Image (tube, rainbow, N blue to C red; front, side, top):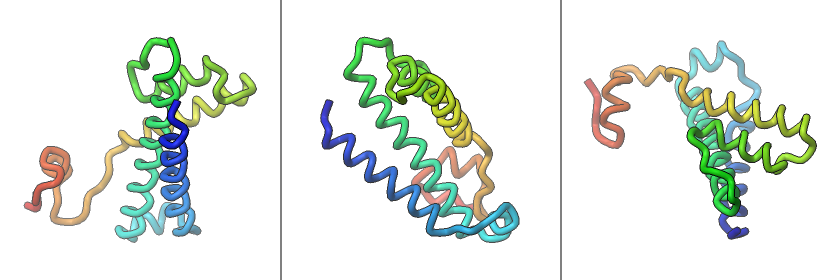
Length: 129
């Protein structure tokens, strides 16, 4: 296992979490009315989840377990390998991380003037209507 890769990914994870933490305190009302705040929080949470998956996939690549078929399954495999330590704690953490993966699939309200269909279909291009 390349410890430098893991260290870089852990630093990325720390930065994404710190970015969300730096915007606290906020609640649903603030997120609903402040698009900039919502953009920062959603982006960094999604990136943190993807970084967790990257770390998990890197760890799993060094094992003989079959590759996971979904992002959520990464955490089941890690739990099965006792990567999270105590079985009860591991189950709780794996379930929380799987729910976080599900968070990535929650519809996101884009900025005014943008349509979600076009934003997703043409990422990286000017897709304003």
